[in-house]
Length: 242
Image (cartoon, rainbow, N blue to C red):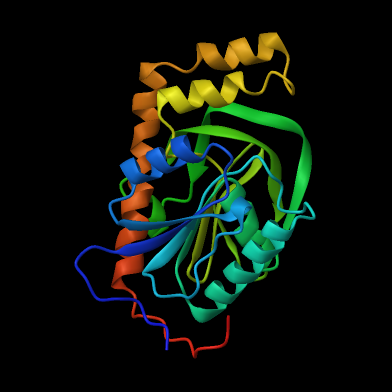
């Protein structure tokens, strides 16, 4: 049987889908108050079971609809984990992948949302407890969840569409609450092959201390997710179902 361990500090699988591995892991280690067991999915790494309090899927420069072995394998593991009842939190790419494997639809927007933006949440979800209903967040994506999975609920949105959703024990957010100023600048400067110089400079002009302080309020969602995952009973999965 695969059951999560009993301890005072939650144990989460961090499914790292990024290609900026060191920076990505630094950000999540800083923001998530839990024991993180890290797996680099593009290298073929995945957990062997579901013995965790929950799991988190990071952002990525990939798209969930790409035909890649590692993406297919990540989708399969994630689908099995969700079916087993393991709580999940997806960030950006992770948000889209969770929507995809639970029956939603992800599409190319044909444009880019990037920079500090305003997102409105519903004021009811525990994921956004103690976070202002009108949030400042950092976004960077050209794909979006175009249709929720059956039974899914939109938790937050803006003029670009769905920014957070819930289905069962799955939670996803399109934005990046884990980013610091350094990461926001690094990601923005890295878009020089996709965005004009003037667009990049406009975004960079908005990456400053005041916006970052405002965006830090959204980081509370990590604590809210960890608290939610910890209070759930352990999953029990027969060996051989992976």
